[in-house]
Length: 183
Image 1 (cartoon, rainbow, N blue to C red):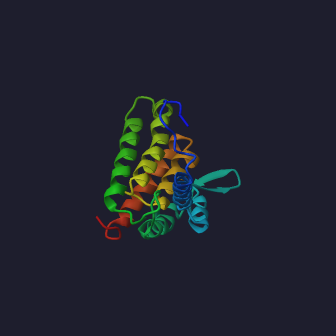
Image 2 (tube, rainbow, N blue to C red):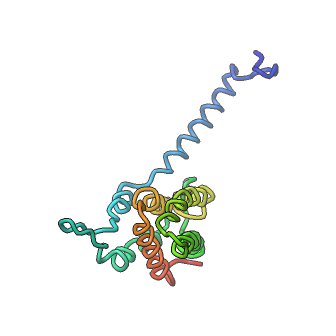
Image 3 (cartoon, rainbow, N blue to C red):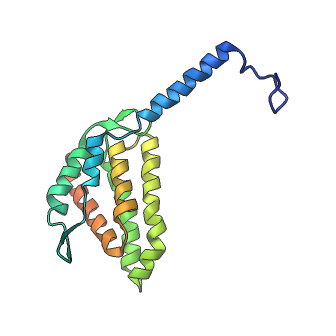
C-alpha cells in the first residue's frame, strides 16, 4: 500500500505492527514515570506564603526557616527526572535558577515603577516554569524540583510582593542547600 508520499507503507505487516505497539508501550511506560508521587505533590501543594489570620495576611513565620529546610530535604533526595531516569539535584542547577529569579527581581526593584515593571516581567517569571521543565527533560533536575518551581511561579506568584517572597524563599533554599547538595 502506498502512503501519502507515494512510498510503500509496511504498516500492514504484523511484524511492523508489533514493533509499533512495542514503541507505543515504551512511550506510555516512559510517560507513566513522569508522574510525581502523591506525597511529594501534597508536600508541594502545602507550601503557602501567607498565614491568614482574620483579615490580616502575614508572611508565614516558618517559610524561610523550617519550611525552606523541609524543601531542601525533599530536593536533596534522589528521584526521577522527567524522562524517568534516576537523578539528584545539584547546587549548580539551583543557583542557575536563582540567578534567573534574581535578575528579574533586580530589574523590577530598580525600575521607576516596580508594580508596572512586575506586570511587564510576569511573562518571564512564568517562563521560569518552562526552563525548569526543559532542565528536567534533559535530566538536570528531578521531577520534585521541577514541580516545586512550577507550583511557585504558576500558582503562588500573583503580585510583586508574592514574587519577593518567592525570591527570599529560594535564597533560603540555596543557603540550606550549601553542603547538602552535590556540586
